[in-house]
Length: 423
Image (tube, rainbow, N blue to C red; front, side, top):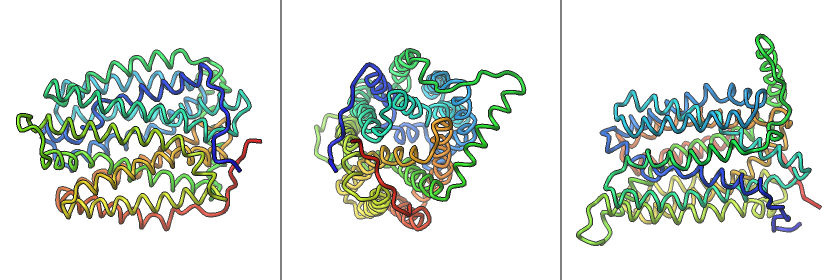
């Protein structure tokens, strides 16, 4: 069994899929989002609540938007998602009031709900049409690599914007540009990637939706699928809820380093945070490319899924301890490891999930995994904010690592699942 990914034809769609991920990850505010909201005068609990509002709204919209994507067109769902994103960025730039920020999060949630799972379904439909579905782990890993490279470039641009403007919030406005370009890219996708669509009106819409739900229910009756979805969702939720707290750690590290004395604190933060996130996303770009190789080092695809889950919990726990001991550099290394694990896991999880779900409900099935992620995230985000407000940054992060270890005993994937090999 070879460890190198098989040959993939890099045609125009491969590059358009990759361009989508590259532009989608040019959210210039991402490396500074915690610091931005803190500069608005919000507590960590309020920041967690904003995350929770976003995740609850995403949860409510996840399955309906997935069904609509399957029933009426995945491309249309993606276009609607990016219109909502752009509106969200505009509100986040112009208004600082908590309730308006909450509205922006709801618009952002619509974008996430309509997008998550749907673009993966577009890729999987393309692989199905071209009869190369057995390459899904390698193909998705390569296209995801482009998105992680976009995140690396994003970190540099974001750092430059903060350094030269002396402002965090300008990044919300700047993010409108790549998202508009990505909207144009999505409009250019061929209609055949929508899959089988039945155009219906009136009461037939509900009948169509019920049929899709029934098919999805049949899939979810499989206990093996349930374990896989909960394993993937819980890991991703802890990662999403915790990852941005690397920013205050980097802020502390930046102020402790001996840098140019003439630089203001915000400029020091921009340099250190931009450099670290650039390195993180270059490494995660490489990690996504190695997902196929990593998965094929094991006799069963369930083994790397379980092992990386435990490693992630351990890294989060240790990183929190290092922060509490004022060893910020070691905590940063721990977070970098967590980012790498998440990006190795993602293509493997998409592969194992897609093995269990029929193509006609693929967008709905992958959206269900995203919905479970948002349920967990809606719980974890305010929890970690509350813990950090009351117990300190290090202790809050460590406790989330313990929560993750506890969850493992309930979401451990069981039973061998052989990895499909291309002959």
